[in-house]
Length: 116
Image (cartoon, rainbow, N blue to C red):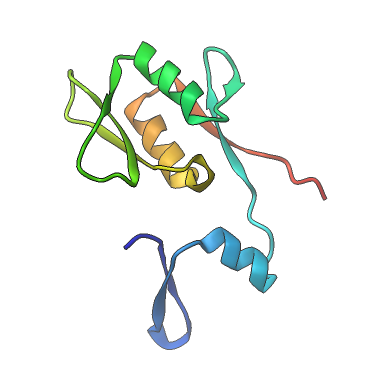
């Protein structure tokens, strides 16, 4: 079970599986899209192929755990594990910030200016 817990009136809460889609559908304003940027090259990470190439250069290796829905990486020199959704279309800012924290000064999360 993954998502975001949303608290409403009177302390009532619920789990929202895809908060970006719900906010857009309900008209509560548009959330700004974020991208993961590889700082040394200035390149926006636009696919898992590119991300894997960068991570391998940093000493990360693919980890083939038991969950087929995850795309994972680990590093022998640490206990860190990066777990990403199998499909890049579900890659979001939570995953991006996880990568940033585990690779300081290598990645940065930026907001994409809205086209409105």
